Figure 1 (cartoon, rainbow, N blue to C red):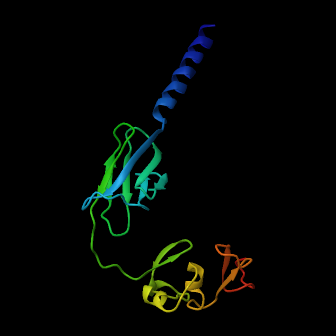
Figure 2 (figure 1 turned 45 degrees about the vertical axis):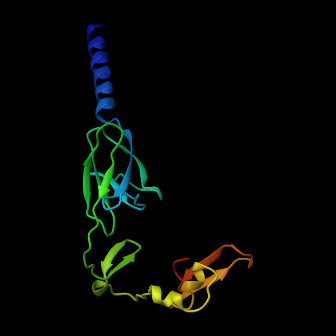
Figure 3 (figure 1 turned 90 degrees about the horizontal axis):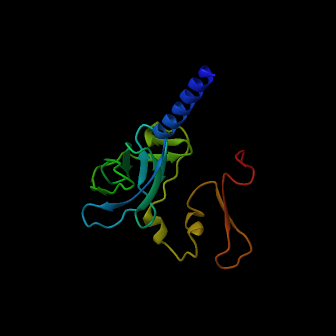
Length: 174
């Protein structure tokens, strides 16, 4: 009887200890620009040392589950990376703009690569290409400017959905 009560006591202690150690808090906050305090959307918020991440909304707010003693890493293109320790349930960040020259990068399905290291075909479409002619939708902006891109509209009604295919109907990717 005494052995059973000791084992039960040890099991309960281990259970409650593990709950305390692995408990996650819902951490919320807002990310702003240090220059004018305007909210920044699309900032990646990551719990340091884990794969847990989220992005800020259009108003700069975010919500992420993190341990009480976690460090959040804030990163976005054009801003310096910032680390903030979680205190309580909030963590606000004010990012500093960085003007640096970037290499030509290509976003591929599995990450990013330098354009010089890429072995496939790459098409660049700049803002100047979109200023020519009248366009009804963003899909039409790309049509005819990217080789192998097929844009089909469903139904023809205003605001109707479109299907975008790269390499056409006979692509191995379908």
